[in-house]
Amino acid sequence: MEELYHKLAEYGQSDYYPYHMPGHKRRPVTQLLERIGDIDITEIEGFDNLHHAEGILKQVQEHAAAICGAEESFLLVGGSTAGILSAVGATIPSGGKLLMARGSHKSVYHSAYLGKLRTEYLYENIHPEMNFALAITPEQVQEALAEHSDAGAVLIVSPTYEGMCCDVEKIAEIVHQKGIPLIVDGAHGAHLGFHPAWPEAASKCGADLVIQSLHKTLPAPTQTAILHVNGKLVDRSRLQRFLSIYQTSSPSYVLMAGMEQALSYMKSEGRLAMHVFLQNWETMLQKLQACKNLQVYPNWQERGNDIGKLVISAQGAGISGQRLYDILLSEYHLQMEMACGSYVLAMFTVADTEEGYERLTKALLEIDSRLQQEEKKLRSTADIPFYPRKKLELWQAWDTGHIVLPLEECQGKTAAEFINLYPPGIPVAVPGEVLNFQVLSQIRAYIQENLPVHGLVNDNGKVGMYVMDE
Image (cartoon, rainbow, N blue to C red; front, side):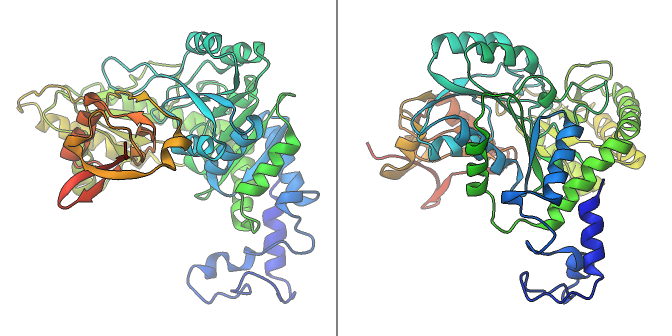
């Protein structure tokens, strides 16, 4: 398709003079604008309006829906965050109840705060060897809905940050028996559905609302995402209202053209690109079987979850996940996606080269051989989530008076601020939860291992936390 991009390129070379935004007036006054200035425009004649799409942007969205197997799709220029906020706001009235995965991104919690929602959690099980969270199961959803029959919607994450995929089809059936919609945070799953070796896309498995970050796993610019809608359980006019609220009134045509091109690429080249992706992935995993100290997940024969998320665990190898991250960055110039207490995460997409696979494989094998003589240590517990008990709803606690206490004095207190690692942005503690010994120990482990902990404060040289003034 790519009609939007070609029309932008043609317009950029025309003699139309811009007496309108943006301020660069399509002139390359900076180095960046030398590349994008010609096609960076605003809503002018012939280019439609994202918030009331009737022309070329409507065509782009219809084309996206056809490619992704949805009834209707909406471009998101504010990332998946805008889609999450809109999806939750559109499906649950103020004060309603949301049944959500506890391992959800912070944007889900923000939507609960904005809607003053009552939240009930689906708690993920933990991988017994690798310490990361597994996918929510249909049985968990069914049991939770039996207990919380007043839930207005269910929200799950699939794939998770580490690539775990839910059985979306079965979960959708269970949720629909209650007459409520299923929202899938599929931010990491925009590439699903283009090759049979990967799980099917949630938009083709019965989910009512699916949010995908195109920029995470497709060749699309940062900040680009898409929201897919299916079925009759979602009021689409209400959804569009919230999209207009949470998205800028000046959407970037550069970003929207980038989304158009990324999806067109996957339609025409995706299957072949994913096939090459799979071959390189399997070759890498087979070679990494030689590791004796580092643990790599998944193994090369495993199927059913997202291909492309490589978890490299250093637990028991004498170093932390952060140390492994630092070695890969400083010695090999390999930038990982994230580090946790005992592992690092590398992400692969259709845009990776053979060199990319070979460099990481060579580096991990070399590091593994150097670790052979090191003393084994106990596995880190910094990754294992110890979920605190919820005492108050998020919106009640976040807007209440708070004080700062040293970390060692916080046990039994109620959190007044989010604590999380970023990435991935999944809260360790949520305002309104009672801080127990386990979660405080986890936070201390994060600090000791120099992980990026957000939400803490420096209280006269001591690490402190915001807690409710009780």
